[in-house]
Structure formats: C-alpha cells, structure tokens
Image (cartoon, rainbow over all chains, first blue to last red; front, side):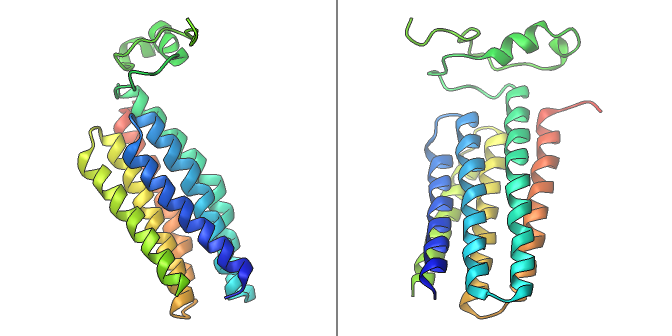
Length: 131
Length: 84
C-alpha cells in the first residue's frame, strides 16, 4: 500500500473507533450524538478517500468520490435530525448541562408548547457557567 | 497486515456501539449507536474491497451510505413523534 493511502485509511478507522468510544462513554444523548456524527462523518470520508487513492482506477475514484461527497453532506444532517428528535422526545440531559435556550423556545411556542415535552432538567436559558 | 489491524479497530468500534445499543437508555441512544455501528461496517466493507482486491464491493459502500442516511431520518421521525 502507498504511504498516503495507509495514513488516510488508518486515520479514518481510528476516528470511527473514537466515535464508538464516545458513544459508549459520554453521559447523555446530545453529547453522544455530537461524538457520533462528527467523528464518523469525517472518519468514513477520510477512510474512503484512502481506499480511492489505493484503488486508483477511474471507476473507483468516481464511486468513492461520490460516496465521500454524500457522506460529508448527509452525516451532519442525520446527526442533527436525530439529536433534535431526541430533545423533542424529552430525553434526559446530563446533570452538568449549563444552558438550554431551546427549552424557553418550546415552553413559549404557541403550538409546540402542548406537543413537545422538553427534558425535565432545567439549567435555565443561557445560565452563567461561572455563577 | 496493517489492513487487518484497521479491520480489528472497526470491529472494536462495532462492538462498543453494540454495547450502547444494548444499554440504551432511550431509543435515540440506540439509533445513534446503531448509526455508528453501520459506519463501522461500511468502513470494513471498503477495507475488505482492498484486502480481497474486489472493487465491486465499492458499490456496496455507496449504497450503504445512502441507506444509513435514510434510516437515520426515518428513525428520527419515529422518535420525535412529529405530526405531519
């Protein structure tokens, strides 16, 4: 294998492993979603780029390049949508959470107030972390 | 040989994500962990394409990427109980 491909593929698998460690060890849904979407998005993109470098055929570059672009576009969207659904379903927040502006939004929204139940934990809107 | 090491790392990622799928506690946790596990599998398929010198596996990578996104969106609609 070429050193470039080896470095890219190695970095990609390491990032995916780190994402899994984050998903296992972080304290609440939102922090886990954060670890999962960022690290896997970049990790898989870098890994596929490394595979494309090693394969080297025009067909390989086309398929993997398309996969990398789709990966970079869709992963943040998927992560955001899952985290938003988790928040709206009232998943508990980490007790160390220090500010939650979205809570005020859902509490005061004329229509969503009755539909969406934000998490019970109330750190207050934009609470001062040093207070 | 380095490819085997990386496949091992992806396998470990899959196992760790599966522990989170089992623990939960919310459905969203399981969905997110399942997503990470899927990415581990996609990466492993891409590495196997290199290892076995079988470029036809790369099409699987492309399709699985799209399927993973669709699965995430579908699950989030289910979890968020949005009324459309």
